[in-house]
Image 1: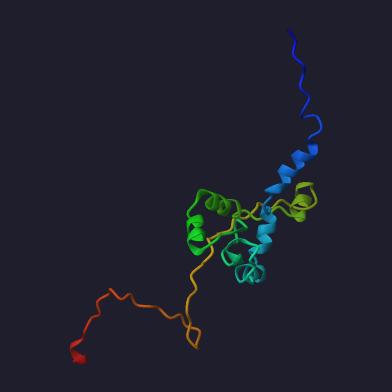
Image 2: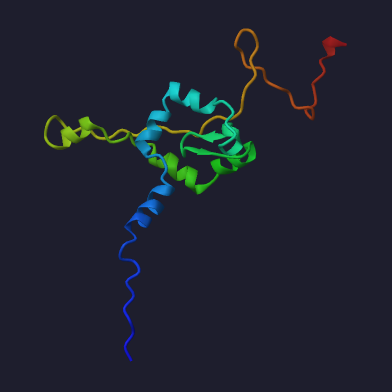
Amino acid sequence: MTYKRKKYHCGDTHLKKRWRVRNRKKDLDEIDQDLKEENAEKLLNQKVDLDLPGAAQHYCLHCARYFIDEQALNDHFKTKVHKRRLKALELEPYTIEESERAAGHGSFKKATKRKIVSQNIEKSQTDEDGDAILEESPNKKKKIDDNDI
């Protein structure tokens, strides 16, 4: 007994493209642009947008992701996904000048590694002079000098 050959996947290229593009994230060169001072400041201090997770207040610069709260962002910083992204961002992105050097128009220059650290989420308090205010823990015992008595 012969079976009819199924030809269901013949014309589903439009479906494949939809699934391929749906979860597309930023590339490393786009994230490298976001890591610059002026762009990073804008992304970390965004206006409240209720359409984004966490109202766009908890954003990871290196992974280009929004999180619902501070705890989820802190947990994300400890994951393998975030650490792999930091490792991938250490090399400077591929540029047009580098491609010209590879084609023989210029001298070879090895790609340099950068030191990428995770973003600082703690907001430090400063006084009028711009000096950081350090808070003492309430459990810490204070030393009493004999001169103060």
